[in-house]
Image 1 (cartoon, rainbow, N blue to C red):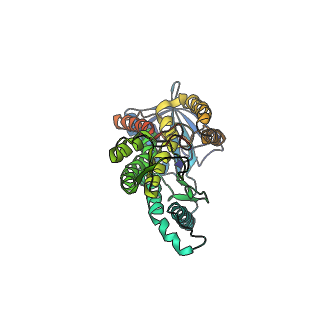
Image 2: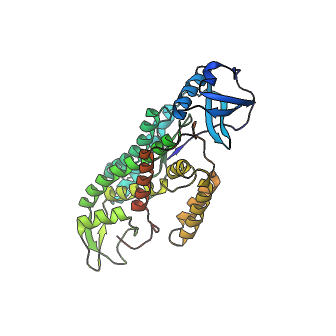
Image 3: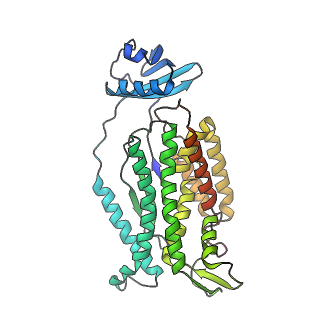
Length: 362
């Protein structure tokens, strides 16, 4: 998951610059200036003009957001914000705490009690390593692509919680500077889920190899889990079609893989500040808010299968459906960006499950 920032539409006048400057007018036909907003038209080729204007404003300590208008284009200009140095010790502390909480959960999943016998916490290593590998890969995918595209992004913030099933609420990075354009928004948005998914697949394969088939029954310990399409396929490849009365007892590593797919689906929900919301912003344009409300309504309806879906609906609504604008909302998406959006949709279909917990057994 990632969050970002955008411009204020209005505000005080910025550092002075000359709208009649030849370097500006070479790439932008100025027709008006109101406070910190330039009006006019970009000169062809548009992408080249936007890149040149970005450099022109940067040399003057300014950052510019270029947007289409009914007649021409507008440029919102703001001073480059002064960012505080990153506090990496916070990232390290949260990561260390998440290692601890996931070790505890993993040890309990192995039938150990690290509270009564502290040294038994080492039995939680397989689950802890697996889930942190998946979550860390997801966030590093965002981080590396963001930095490659010139976005100032933080290192991952892991979220340790004393949850008896997971020990963590996942992780996120924060984009401290605007995304260059809609294409970059798609690439940063898909990078995390795609890398996390690619890591979750081999983790699940290893975990299923360590899992075993047992006789199912009301006395069987554990929680029944829903099964996404990809997890069902991997389970079938490992165990085939199980006869009536038998079930799979998942090894903690397999459960970590299951969680990895679940996290992928959650992040790809096409709304708000989720990864899917970033991609939809780039694809759907002005229809993104309407789609966001459709997603919220669908999650509320899915509450009949799992009460967690209404919680996520409320969370998305509370954080809002507004989205920080990229610096360039004029340039169209490339064919690659559109294909990446299709990949995101395919990943959502493969990993989504209406009833993740308390459902029929896999």
